[in-house]
Length: 476
Ligand code: NAD
Image 1 (tube, protein in one colour):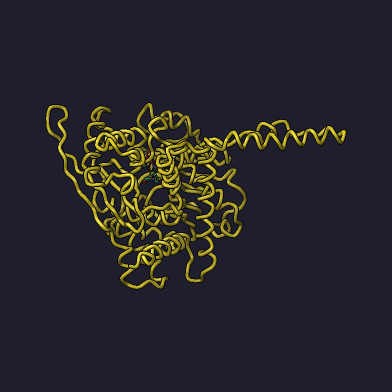
Image 2: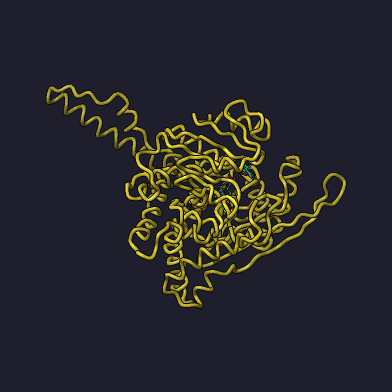
């Protein structure tokens, strides 16, 4: 439970923003312009369901339009409120700026528990919400482009895209009105895994620098590192899966809404995920130890903690007991500003949300570009690339024959080298590049300035500077 004395999520974001701008030389007017949320639209609409009219409340908040379209997910949760969408919209502004995705920040939410409704009911509700937003250009390929967030996924994005297309039958770019769509409805390979994949790439980049690891009291590689994950949903599941399968990390704890599972020998992520999809939660999972209070898993001894569920889960009530050396904020706002102070004091390194979970918006950006260009990535180059590589291999083989050598290329070298990149490989490569460059921009400030001693402040400094430059260029 979060302490009621703590600031709200939006205030928490503002406190962190203020800490950073205090170190900058922005004019007070510009500082205020960047801080405030431009507009928040609240809609209450009725849908006839189960024989009666049910009223739903939804929001779409636009934080900053220094670049358009604005971008940000749509969340389905009972906890959705104006404060939350405004905080999340602000984070989107800073996130897009940090990873150089050319968007302003926005976010939306619907106050609903998706588990309470049948699929066909959710479709009617989603289409009606999309209609309300689209008719005010709050869903629009060049104005405002939503994406999935907690409680929503490909299915909802496909309904939204279809709803927009029905309302705008002559818009050739209609598919670009929303991202995170299924591949067969204008989506892009690698979007579902993108945020979790980005978390993995972020950790890999962090682990490339001895100096950075040392700040967290860590050393060596990701292999064997003990990782605790909160929330095994889209983001948490993919991060845990890739870290355990590809980097050899041990997932020693998982916290979910109905409890936690801890196992010092490592949890089988696939098995636990299947258990959750079949049983609705982690309770009853046969391996490891079950904790009735899932939040206690966050306090387990581990190297890396990945909060990937809700905001405010690491707060004044538990920050002191967190034992992880490194926290990577896969969720938005999981650490309150008060907890952030305590953890920094304890020497815990926090890789901040605006960077850590930017994989989602990065690949959404690629999807939006794909929709606007109406062509799959790699379609023009792939075979040409293969043909050029074939030339090199042929030449090498001919040369070795002429010289009378028999060169044994490694058995899989030819297959690997000859194969041109498909869309998924290109997307992963673009994501990896984005995560690396953004991390480097943050660490340059982290290590380069005496008045900056954490990555969050560094991230804010980098991103606010770019937003300010956009506003200045516009003459504001
Ligand atoms: P999701 O709905 O797929 O998963 C959330 C998971 O958290 C679920 O498994 C849910 O059961 C669990 N959960 C809910 N309450 C919990 C609690 N009290 N304790 C522990 N677990 C709990 O959502 P998601 O898309 O994975 O999003 C998770 C976080 O990542 C959110 O903060 C979201 O804003 C952020 N995020 C998501 C994306 C994306 O592409 N989906 C992108 C950027 C950021």
